[in-house]
Image (cartoon, rainbow, N blue to C red; front, side, top):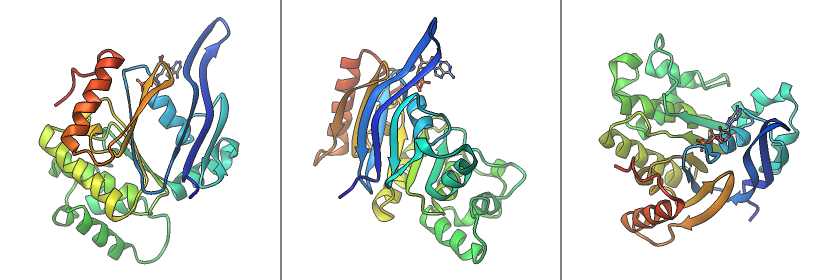
Length: 251
Ligand code: ADP
């Protein structure tokens, strides 16, 4: 089967000749539909740059990125907003909820279509266990609930790709665990394809495969296979040790 996402020889440079930062140096990989891929690496290894290139927030210096056959590096600036709205879902560390709207209204924001909004919000709220808080405002709910609302908003349009950048970064360990179970069930029950950047080994252990970046290149990759999550976690820690650091934040 054709992969849903395919990166071919991606390079991203910042600056100019005298002062060039090679944030991404020749990265290629593919993601199958329904995969849950983690991207790990020390600070400055290129994780955010890579995610920004895939989400079309940043442009690549060289190479091609295909999402279901569409070369996103060739999209014109005018069509980018529509492309993102129709194909991508985003979950960020800081939730990005609007304080003046209720949880329900925040989720509805993502619905660009006309028609039956309410049943879709109810259905998503049921799946993410936030039905009781739909009429509350973000300041009235917990961090974990806010993040589940952000997840509902991210997936309500059934995006081809869900992009998560440090989604557990602002959560305590219990809320992080609940959110990760939620993301896992979005992956398993809705067959959503997920790409998650994290520096945290516990968070990464929920993914099915992990790419480890170092200095803008893929250092190695790890497949969960039939491992238990704790066995996978141990393997992740081992690679982080080989990478030199990065284990200080582990829960
Ligand atoms: P990570 O997300 O793994 O911490 P980044 O993708 O943020 O890494 O950064 C990779 C490299 O690119 C770093 O050396 C960083 O300083 C550099 N970089 C990132 N964004 C910019 C930018 N807008 N201008 C110049 N250099 C940048």
